[in-house]
Image (cartoon, rainbow, N blue to C red; front, side, top):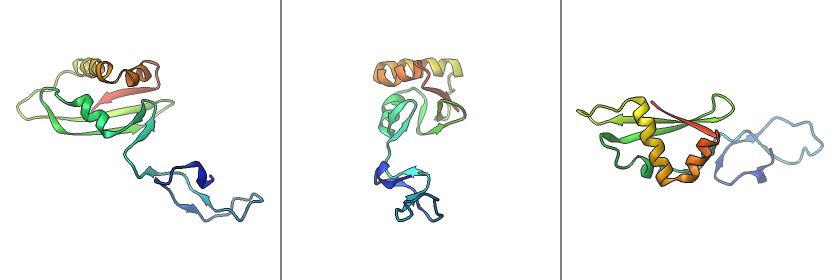
Length: 126
């Protein structure tokens, strides 16, 4: 992979093994393993932590600590929300939580909701 294809804050390494092509003088990079910034491109679109902060803000009983994982178990990305609930608060049922999250996504980020409806990604809470 030529280095010019990627942003300078992508995390990778230079490949040391020869490629077998006539351009032996060019350095190649290995597969990109991460990003130096917080923006991630996935089936949902270009996402950043502030999107989830806005999306999850104000949900009754939800703790301030949460994680988002972008998984690729198949042809589309899976956005996994790892949520914690405050003590003495019961979590809503999975169906209620999904309904609430999708309504908030439609209200606050219709672009991401449209990508979800088109099947570019799916969302699950754990």
